[in-house]
Length: 463
Image (cartoon, rainbow, N blue to C red; front, top):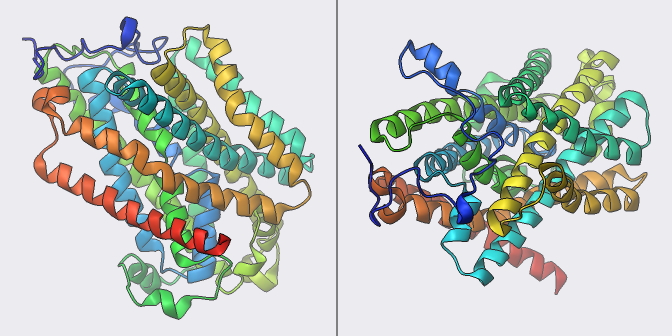
């Protein structure tokens, strides 16, 4: 049975101009069973959620989460939780858009907007991708520098371009990319769990921190280098990154689905939701653990943790980390940071390809497209690394700034996503329920209000 949208187009037939599929080299390459046990079917659909979860636990999260704990104890745990819930909501809508329309968010936006708006949204999204790369590439590069003592400019170059080799795995099987990413995620999780166990946090403090507290900000202000509102925006920006919405709407299409069958599409949406929410819950655990480590080990020492290098050294310093301080602990921290940065650059490169092809309809060889996409993001990363060479404080402060910027530009990706998935003309019978649409626009409004407040504060400082 063909499922008709409001404009009489069947689901699965809504391809972009010229009929180009999103990430066409891997689109529809993974077979999934239509019957079998719950776990067998979940495993077949699992993978896209892992690649999405990577963006929720990148180096930017490490800076904002550890700084949040060191500055305001367990207070901002509630922000981490709310950010994760917003992420689950948006990623569900992004995945659903990709499965129902067989378009990624960039393609859907380009198809339904005029040229000036399309180019403006592409430009904003490209800036967001650059901001993401600044945090992820530099974070991974700092980890390499800490582990091996190599110059930072060398490690930035290594971290940036080895992702092209890793993405070559897609030539053989996209599942290899998913397996690699999942292995690195588990590495990060185990290191974070180990750090938390050693730090012996206050369970009562953790439980209290998960509940939003209105008055606590005033009583804790002054303990850190960054204001609570700035860290709140940074945590949201580090957690719900714009490129993840474009990425998810594309990679869910790697599964072979009969898009003309309404029941098959609905089934795929269900398994996509399971995969996405489970993986994002895992990402929430990692971010919460990072904040808990910051609160349990470094509370009161936020001024001494202005860079990754200082966090690394603090884990060896008994005056800061207490009796558990050791070189092994700091090495584990740097290794997990490296895994985080490498993971994020893999997904960032994929997202860059999706964004450029979807918005601009570039028709160039895959390897050239990857070099162009990566190059756009890497040039400012390398220039900034050279400019701030030898000054880790400024470099890490810049990473925090990029996460705040991501929070500011997130609404530009949220608005089209919410609009399209709430449109019966686009989604047909899979349109969002009214309560889901209201909740999504409420999140959009709150985030926009926080951003306007931040921009207003910054303008006041400037003028």
